[in-house]
Image 1 (cartoon, one colour):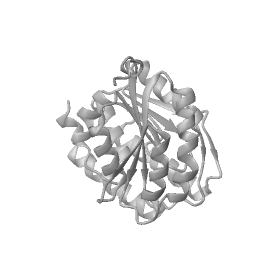
Image 2 (cartoon, rainbow, N blue to C red):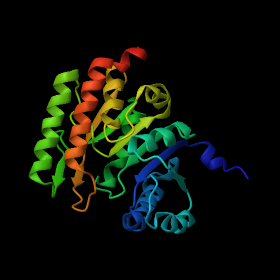
Image 3 (cartoon, rainbow, N blue to C red):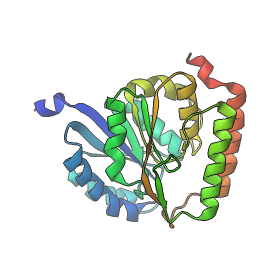
Length: 247
């Protein structure tokens, strides 16, 4: 039976990439689900759990979460957050696409602001820990210095206007994603920066929304390895200029 109420609404797909996150899945998907149900009722929304070949009890936990409704599960054997986002976004039938980290470090009360920015005519909306008005809690000083240094680097190299490329709190119009994503080659953590640089260089509108961010002390992100990958990524796209294929 067709749901005519949903047919009149714009679609919104919220992707949550995970790798061995059984605890955070069980703890954070229910409140995210409740939030979307209560605050995003004007949209035909869904949560997509993108599993990067987890080896823990993630599939079992997801089995229970699917009972909530409006929750989908996609398992990808090749690892990589960028790869997962690209596959799920390109395969989505929703007009608006988004993603957030499973630890919900980004305060979800700011999520509607991202979607508002898309509704106002922007192609991409990004949560920012570095823009004026943002608040970051419990972030180690080393990470803060590296984050601001990275921001200065990519803004200087590419003449970029936004400040925070790597925040796990973003939304994009499907129409923009279809054109930009084929040019994005990175499958890991540099995916975000590459996506945004290509988008701005190609003339797409990007809105930056200052948010409240609470760092997760149990995060499994390897800072040094990720930083090295980011530097290599900047070098690669500086010389290859992938946005020229879209202009």
